[in-house]
Image (cartoon, rainbow, N blue to C red):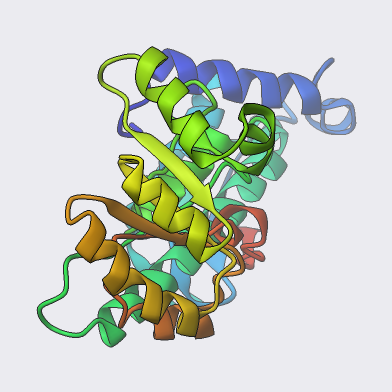
Length: 293
């Protein structure tokens, strides 16, 4: 089970993926293994070709359940567990036709989500190593730069890697960005409109491209100020000033946050680092499915 997601939601997404890949079934495998006599039971192992953090185990299991439940999946590594190159992650047993039908989707999801979790873990560990004692906790989050159809699963993988979730959609938070500022007349005017009409439970965040915009956002009562594409040196001098202006404001940094830059930002009194690369450029983890019998 994926925390926060209904099983029906997961099944709906996976069913769409299966329909895309198998609109009329697996033609090739059906030619060879389409009869009870030829559709023999086989065993396969999901193998790691490099080290990483495992994510997507529940999805792999559900894929085979949706294909009829004839394939049994037994995991050797738990969700969120570390694995090494050459390690067996899972054993799969069942009819060869059904096992092949889900092979590509299962591998694609496990590889991609494990890559997201692995990259997230690197960011979280980098922050932990370079965060001076006494500073407030510093969260690593993703952004909405996700692949269509995969957002909920990618955000899950970020949490598996030790990160946190940013807003999940345009409906789940108020983030005033540069285009909103142009359309409303600036930070002050945008904040006044947001405070007047925003639903009660929502915090209001302002994206600031310059120190002056950040100061205006804090002075105007923003709950969160996102310091976008600013250098570490600029934030190091600006953040103490913003803390003096509004001690309760949450300060977030975003924009090109490489692991190298995060090392420097960890020493600054920020609250959140939002990293688009966690989901839009995680690379890939090399996994393979070996048939054993």
